[in-house]
Length: 85
Image 1 (cartoon, rainbow, N blue to C red):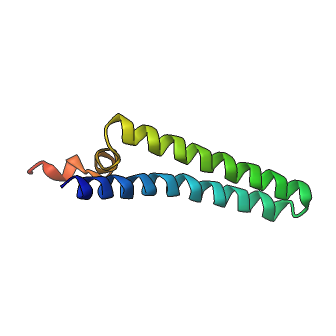
Image 2 (tube, helix red, strand yellow):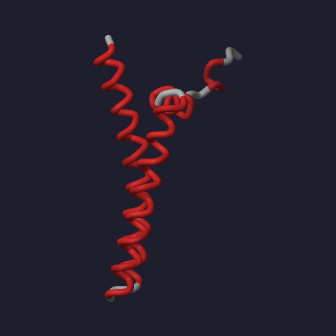
Image 3 (cartoon, one colour):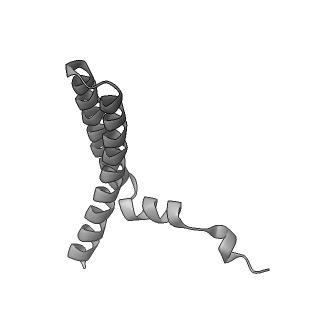
């Protein structure tokens, strides 16, 4: 049972990490697209690196705080659908 719990938490960690990484890649690509020279490349790499590190930090803190799957399930929940009309 512990292996399954670990694998689901790892999956949640990866989802949180990749969401921040994707934002970093998109912002970095936009910066590089608008400034296609060495300075633009350096700025893009810095932006991507910062979001990469932020993704690691946020995912790890979420895992230690209460579990990544718990945090992700709270954001995906829709309490308005639980109420009966």
